[in-house]
Length: 274
Image (cartoon, rainbow, N blue to C red; front, side):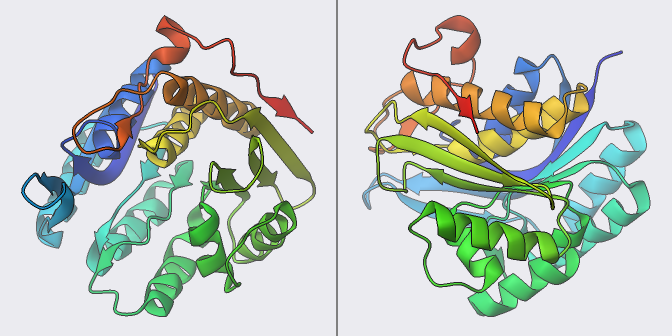
């Protein structure tokens, strides 16, 4: 039977990130994907391709969620940029009702959330406890954990333990290209043990969509029967191949190429697990 995965995320017209990235990644696992759109991200070519975000009315987002959850029986749900406080609260209620595996990419953009502290509280109170897997980057992990900026593996581990104590079942803190050194390092904490994933940094370019694609890959992996650890390792491999084969565009930030692990795998990509 074909697995089904739902993403709740913004639309990125560049095609490298957001729900466009999620749907591409779902298909790499042979899964069927649907999307509820929370916002639309465009770029102003007359202002250095700066981002312009148009938020979708929360009532429309709610109708999308109710529609797709009525139409399909899903095997996993992934969320990215939620767009508003109302959207986050509606999603939390739907997750409590459906009790599906939930991969939470805690994008720190939310209209109406006020300060960053308010946004942290919104996520920690309503969505973190529902997460099967949460995938913060260094900035997001520090914000959720209430820590100073993270610049070491030790800091990643500390943040992961705090976020797990907030209720997330599995915490994946992404060091990626932001952490100094030759390796892109991610750590996974399941409440008992720390697993460290390493791969060589394969591209010096700025690449859009790695975080979205990593979370959606984990969701698709879980939906198709992989264990949490195997899903995370698979996601890291697929994203690394996508970064190695990224596509240049006019914005100056390259687009991740989602099918690269299948169509043109890079010999540089090798993930080790400790």
